[in-house]
Length: 81
Image 1 (cartoon, rainbow, N blue to C red):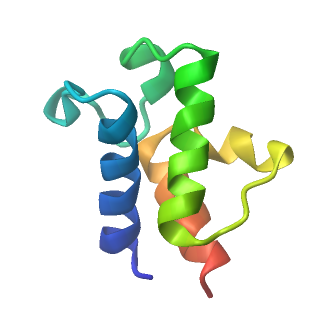
Image 2: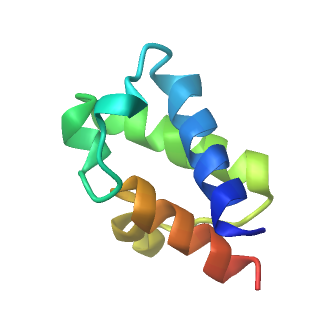
């Protein structure tokens, strides 16, 4: 998986949880959980969706890497190498 594909999967997974998410207003290093007002259940749903769509196991200790679009994409790329 390349970085562009990873970023698309991250955005699709967020949109699954927050359908009206405005990615145009969201910077790559901005904490999307705060910007999109995701509560803990929304974030958990995002993590589960991301794992299901990629087939990558995401453990609790991995979640700090999944706070920004850029960090999430980097995490996925690293896990698919």
